[in-house]
Length: 223
Ligand code: 5GP
Image (cartoon, rainbow, N blue to C red; front, side, top):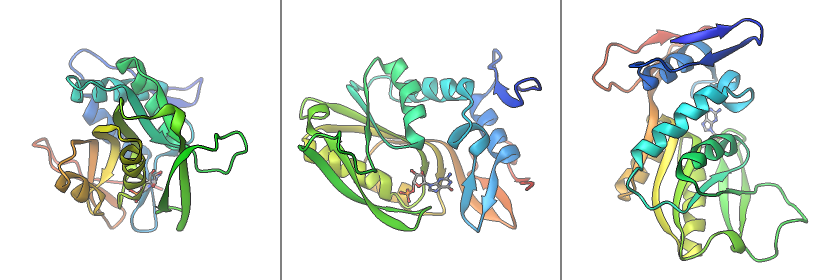
């Protein structure tokens, strides 16, 4: 059930006994998501700008349950949107979060792993960097991010895991857009990919979720 907290002017999520969290997540995407162009979904009210910490907490628990048996030692993400999700998830794994930096920084160590990433939403290429201090061959890495589109961000992070000689345990994504090809490539590479909501298509300003054996999830998105 979604509760609207009028005082705080935010939607807060509380989990009742038996409430299906994945249905709640999809409902938030449907009701609060805004479509930009033909293929970008903005969920700034709960994930990418204002953050619903209750919802992030449930996301963290869900990722923990999906990678329960894995010996994760680090969670790796990319700044900025991945950081909040990764931090809350990390509390369930009791491991540190390392985030790849996009911005040039004088504070960053000289010894870094780096990789090129083409930003789908910004339409430009940038270099991501991770200090060699914080990732090494002893690590079992779980990559977490908010969205998966063409897989460029994940591919850059995966490249950094490889450079570090670390083991990639899997990838956890909050919203995958399966009409773009990132998910297919990751699955075909034999990597465990766990996407909590999968958008199959966007048609006439409607978000259509991939069927997961539940009722019809199609709903009109209002601007
Ligand atoms: P990819 O690298 O898989 O092409 O794109 C994933 C990255 O681009 C994510 O880190 C995310 O920040 C951003 N992104 C891609 N598609 C969307 C979208 O529809 N909405 C939002 N908010 N971000 C997106």
